[in-house]
Image 1 (tube, rainbow, N blue to C red):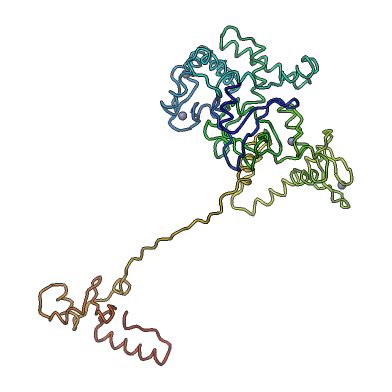
Image 2: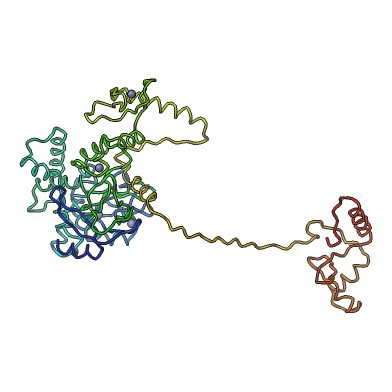
Length: 484
Ligand SMILES: [Zn+2]
Ligand SMILES: [Zn+2]
Ligand SMILES: [Zn+2]
Ligand SMILES: [Zn+2]
C-alpha cells in the first residue's frame, strides 16, 4: 500500500479512507480539463465472448488472427501479441487443453477472467511475472465485494434478497467450475465466489473508439475511484490501456470521481441502477437534490413523459416506490404498462417519419451499455479545445493555356509563315532585329510588344474581323481584344 502511495503521489494523487465511503482517490495537485490523471494496464483481461472467435486476446485486433494450436481457444493477431501474453497463456493453455469440449463452451468471459486472475497470481508468487506497486494481487484483494458489504452490514448473509441469493448461488456454481479447471491447491470455492462478486462490481468493459465492446479487464488501481453522478473525471480506453481524464478543473485536495453508470438518466433511474449493479446509495450533489425543483425539471427533460390530461401540463417521472410514473404537477399515477403504451405510441410516430428519409436506422441502446459513450460525450463536451485560430493556406497551380488550345485554327500561309518557320528552324533569312520581336508559345506565333506583353499574330482575314469588332466596340457594346 505504501508503494502504491509513493507511485500515486508522483502523479499528484493519494488514497484516503473515509469512514462512510471506504477508499477514495484524492488529488494532491490541480488537474486541468482533459488532463490524464491515471493510466493503467489491466491486471487480467479477456476478449469479449461475442467476438471471442474474431479478436486478438491481447490487443483485440480483428485482422490476421490465428488460433493457439495447443488449446484451440485463444486467438492472436501475430507473434508480438502472442509473446506479450505468453507467460500467462502458457499456464492457461495447459489448463484449457485439459477441459473437455462440451465444458469449453460454458467458459464465459467471466470464468476465463477468473481463471486468468488465479494463474497470474501464481506467476507473480513464483516471481515469473514481476510484481510492482501498481501491479500486484494485493490490490485485487483490497477490492470491495458485494458479499463483503453484506457481511459488514448485517454480520452474516442471512438477510439477503431473493435476487441476491440467486446471484450468490450462480457465483458458487461458477466458482466450482473454476476450481475444477484450475486444480490449484489451497483455493476454496468460497474465496473464488467472493472474487466473482468483486469482478461484478469492479471489472470494466473495454471499448474501442467506436464504442464497440472489445473485452473485459480488471483495473485494481482505477477501481479505487468512487462513483459520482456528477463526475469530475471519465474513464476511457486506448486498446487495453484504461485512461482516466479530468473533465473539469480538479483543485488540489478534491476527490477524483468517475461515473459507473450512464449519467444521462433521471435521479431515480440512476439510483436504481447503482443499487442493482453496485449495491450502494449514491449521495453525490446531484442525488442530494432528489425531489427538488431543478431535479424534477432535469429528470423531466431526461426521461419524463407529458401528463396526458388536457388541463395538466406536468411531467410524469419514475416513482421511487416502483409503482410507475407520477405526475409532478397533479399527482396522477400511471402504471408501467400505461407508460409502455405511451412509449410505443411515440415510437409509431417516429416510425411514420422514417418514410421521409432515404436511410434511417433506429437502435436502442440499453442504459447499462451506455456508460462508455456517455463518458466520451462528457469528455468531448467539457474539455475546451484551445481557441488558437488555424491558418489554412490554399496553394493554387495555374496551368497556362493558349488561344490555340481553346480555338484551334488551321494554318494559313501568309506573312506569319516565314517568321514562324524562321523561329522554328534557327537559320537566319530574316534579320535578327526583326525576329527578336516574335516568339512561339504552344505552337502559336506572338509579337512581343512594349513591356513584354504578348500579342497573338493574326492573318489578314482575321484582322479585318478584329478591326471591325474593335470599331464596333467604340460605338456599340461588343467585346474584342487585339491581344487574344
Ligand atoms: Zn494482437
Ligand atoms: Zn493456447
Ligand atoms: Zn449520484
Ligand atoms: Zn398531471
